[in-house]
Image (cartoon, rainbow, N blue to C red; front, side):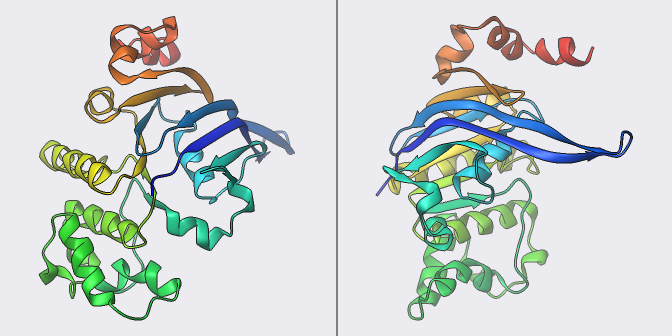
Length: 256
């Protein structure tokens, strides 16, 4: 079943050591975020590098916890859910493919084995590979012997193996060429519909966001600048900062 995600006053700060002045400082990464992602929605998070996009995803599957506020998953506090149980429902694919040592098969079934599944694993591995458009002939291959595009699809298959309700995608096509990127986008769109997945898709690519997202949030310096239907964000922005960012002017102002 798909899940609704609610963010209520979510903030994140981190401590870092300022070696030049020999003292600890606080870095504000996310600032008072309140919004919701609907069941089975493909929700895109747009913003420049350092905006806090990846941190936001990490809070959903509890790789980190908020410093302020809370996140609700299907009406339950994320912080109250056992981390292992939560990650069965919340799959994540990172920007660069990352694997456990071993074969494609061993990686795809890692999660179900961790959760105690002992039977039907070979069939599950084949089904998940087929779902992402890969041949079962790859199951015995070492992950490092695959192309980057194949590797990213294996990462997606591994996330699907747990039967998640939520899929977190952290710039999953950044290492792919345009052809592979478009194929991955079509795959994600199809899986979202077929499996009724709630998808949070992080990207800094304006055109990709227009292709992928149903609704989009623009995040800059940890602050939600605007949230709206994706096409409206580009064609009818409510914020002048949104207009400048979508026109490619924000980077010039920020760094020029």
